[in-house]
Length: 431
Image 1 (tube, rainbow, N blue to C red):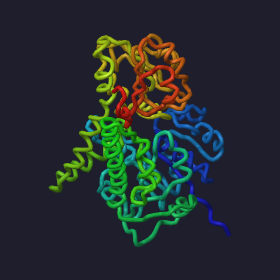
Image 2: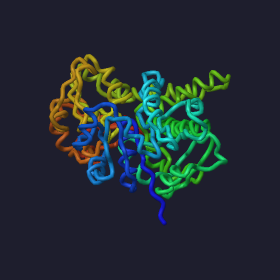
Image 3: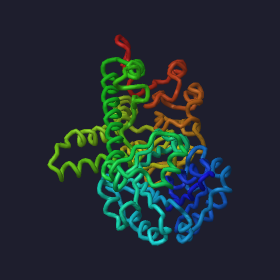
Image 4: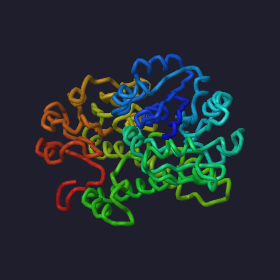
C-alpha cells in the first residue's frame, strides 16, 4: 500500500514562501499557503503575484488545483509540516529584524496538529531554532537556497537539503523524510546550530570568490589584461571549479550576503575571534559599488563637467524587482547634481533616489542626448540593443558597461568608448 503524502503548509507568502510552496505543489504535494494579509491572499487566488520571479506565474497557474491560499491561520492545522518561510528584512547595517518571524511563529505554533512539525526556513542566527518553545523533535531548521531570478529552478531541482534537528542521530521524522525525499537530492542532517551556520558558511565562501574576482578584475584594468580570458583557466582548476563565482560585479547587493557578513562579524567579536577578513570584504564591497562613479570621474567629467546621463537598469540584479543595496542606486547617490534618465524593465524610477531623475519610456530613450550611458543591470533585454542605434542617439560616446552587456566589437565599430569591468586597454593603445 502506498503511504499517503503529507500535506505541506507554508506561513508567509513573501518571495521565499510563495516560490517554495508553488514548488512543493509542482512536486505533487497538497499545499496550504497562509498569509495574514487578506489582500495578498486575494491577489494570489486571482493569480496576481507580489514578486517578480521568472516562470513563477506559469508554475502557479499549472498547480492551482493542489495549492490553496488562505488568511485563516487555523487552516494550517490540516498540515503535517508547516514551514515558516517569511523573508527576513535587513537594515543598512546588515542586521536582521526577526520580529516578524517571531510573531509568525507565535501565531502558527498553537495551530499545529498534535504530531505536526514546524520547519523554520527563514535565515536566522545560530541558536534560534533550539530556543523555540516547542517540545524536542517538533522543530526543524531547513536551510533555504533561494536566489532571486533563479528561485523556481533551484526550488524544483535543489542541490541538497541541509536539515537542522534536535537529535540528528534519530533520523528524519517521517513526513519530513517523505517531503524531502521527493526531490531526489542529497539530504544532510545535522544539529540545529550547524545547519544555521551552514547557510552563513556557504555565503562566506561565495563572498570570498566574489571579492577575489572583483579585486583581480580591477588589476586587469590597470595592467592591460582581460579577466574574461583568465576566468576559463580557473574554471578548469579542480580546486576552484566550473561553477565558481568568477564574473566581476559591483560589490555585494540584495541584503542576504551583507546580513551574513554582519552576523559573522558580530559572532566573531563576541567570541574574541579575528574577523578582519570579513570586515575587509565589507569594505571591498562598498569600494566596488563606486566603480561606475570613479569611471565617470576619469572618463567623462574632465571634458564634460555637467553631463546628461542615461542609466539602464535599477534593480540590484536581473530578473528581480529588488533594489536592496543596488549598485545603481548607490551610483545615483553620487550623481545628485546631474540630470539622469533611467529605464528598468520592472523597477520604476523614484524621485526619492535622485533629485533630477526622470523615467524614460524605453531603453533607447535613455540614450537620447546623453553624454554618457551607464548599463547598471544586465537585463536580457539590454543584450540585444544595437550599438549603432545607441551611438546615433547619444550626444557623447562613453558607455560604462560593467557587465559587458553590449557587444564589444559592435560598440567599437559604432565609435563608442566601451568601458567594462576587468578589461584594461591593450598595451600601446590609447587609455
